[in-house]
Image (cartoon, rainbow, N blue to C red):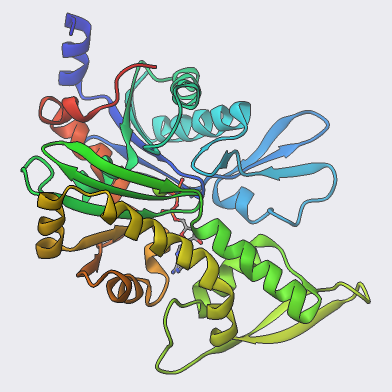
Length: 344
Ligand SMILES: Nc1ncnc2c1ncn2[C@@H]1O[C@H](COP(=O)(O)OP(=O)(O)OP(=O)(O)O)[C@@H](O)[C@H]1O
Ligand SMILES: [Mg+2]
């Protein structure tokens, strides 16, 4: 570490970023979480100019005339559109700078544990080009575990499951490192797609991804509800081409969600099978911690508990755990620096 780095740490111009498939969160040292916005950018096709970012751009998803394109630049937890991601980061970093901050910040970014060296480089370059001075990467499950406050430095194993938009990440962490992990590209987005498919098949109804997500959040569940619910859904009839309203109930949505949820549960079981026996016994004692927006699906912790026979707890504010973890890393950099990803 050279003098410049040490100096930067004292000045404290530090930022933590959770660049998620669905949501981007930013933490600024000394200020806490300053930004929580959808990872969406709207672009004017003719000029290639960005016209909206975040919440405003998300409202445009599936509603844009031909002249505008609303893009989700992250797919399955990794950068699918490099330029647009950079644009999004530049916009967000600029936005927080306007709120009375510094010049070029030092940044810790959380990335999926399974990403390749090339994908890592893409994240690093994007953040770099967006205006960071130094960029550090940390595996998402490690950041989440730090954010939740799990005892990851102890020899006892902690299991954390992050159900995000693009990926579900499962990791067992002990002695400050990931002992075993599994990542599947099935999470919240896939739940939305199976709902879209269900409506197409059963009702010949075409809906956009925002509508499917809303159905999931409003009436979606992983286990039977005490009182089953229903809601009206508007879309376009595939046969007549006209707008149509139908009614869906929580039972059929649960049925549709079965496939992605089974994939997630199977991945958790398989991670448990690969966990060294001593750590497996810790997990019996301490259970599994769920985080990520997908952990908010009704009944998912109960279902995972039933399927694994283990205690399962959902973290408080599950969408914020990862960015909170990056914040703790910045706050106690020397304690956590050994947990950062090196290379690439
Ligand atoms: N109440 C809810 N019920 C079910 N799902 C929810 C709820 N609230 C949010 N979600 C889902 O959580 C997902 C987003 O979670 P999160 O913000 O943790 O993902 P991300 O970090 O952006 O994605 P990734 O980590 O995969 O890159 C979305 O699919 C969203 O629909
Ligand atoms: Mg995430």
